[in-house]
Length: 136
Image 1 (tube, one colour):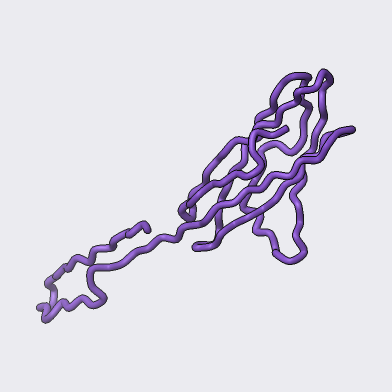
Image 2 (spheres, rainbow, N blue to C red):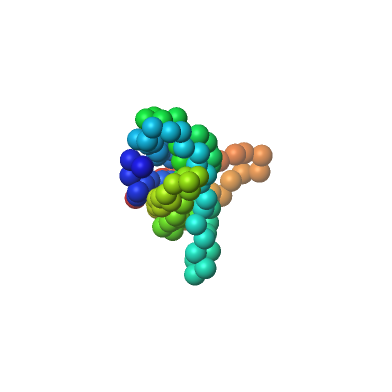
């Protein structure tokens, strides 16, 4: 069993990562060996934005196993979705889904033009342009 079948990472800013947990539970009286495989979809090319820190292991009887999942989006303003299958030797198969959205940086500047006017030879002049980061 797993604690949830849909893992929503929400909005993650490009260049950042977010980590979430998945717990696999073994309520049986025998240990269980498992492997996790990324499901492939023939219609959508996977971006592989979701990375599992563990893809196989053994869960002792009546115990749980923690899987850390890291979401590192690479394409701004894109919704990412991937499915994974947990296969238990001699047991069942469980599918879980990961999804999240990559937020882009939204920047602007205070002026598109800078006029230094007339400057005497050998003198300097400076102007300020402000760059604003408008996280949406």
